[in-house]
Image (cartoon, rainbow, N blue to C red; front, side):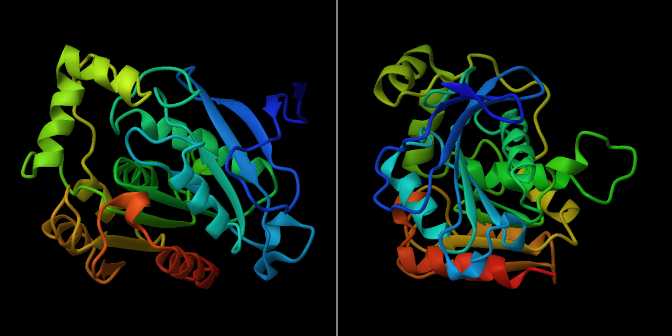
Amino acid sequence: MHIDPAGRVVRSTAIPHSETNRGTPIRTFLHTVDGVTIDSVYDPPASVYDASPSPSRGPVFVIAHGFTGDADRPHVRRVAETFAQYGGVVTFSFRGHGASGGASTVGDREVLDLAAAVRWARSLGHTRVVTVGFSMGGSVVLRHAALYRADEPGREGRTDAHSDAVVSVSAPARWYYRGTAPMRKLHWLVTRPEGRLVGRYGFRTRIHHKEWDPVPLSPVEAVPKIAPTPLLIVHGDRDGYFPLDHPRMLADAAPGHAELWLEHGMGHAENAAPDELLRRIGAWAVSQES
């Protein structure tokens, strides 16, 4: 354990499940503005897209995982391995997940976790940040992009946490959706004491016991506020959690701005996203460089 130049405690440089040898990753705890510690990992770029020693030459992807995920899950590591071919990668565990502190608010205060990760990515020398979120993380990247903007004067502490491009995969458009069996099970997990026990001991996810107050900005309300930041919405036509009216509602909320990819045969979130799709997302992010 040692202290990095920014004064953060670096716990380890080894990442479980990593099979490549592309340089030494950095692992540290970040701190959100509300005092939660966030377990975070940086993988340097490993691609011809950023052959220069200077990381500012290429983007950094900040990955927001889905509910019950964390930075060490194999499917999150696979996403990181793929995106590292297009730029640097920051993965982290949302509050209440993995080694991070706090308790999950299932998409509300998680925007603060993402903001801390984006600030860290910029502190490492990257000038272009692409946020990529899956499921719950997909809703978080949308809300984050609406709340943290580079073009708002007088918002010190927020502009350095803004994203330069946004990718939302398998995200809901609206809150409290219970139209599918998996979502009814998820609501039981979140709202019932016995469900939260299952979350803690069965899924390594600590869930906050309080209801939202106030109810946060919904993803579909956030989308119109993201322009002109490039926005890509990705959704599988076999998603068992959120049917296709969700991505279509999100795209319709930003006519002429959001790009919508409906993926044939794809299910839900990171586990269902094939490597070929992840490579297309990486290429799309690189193509958005101004």
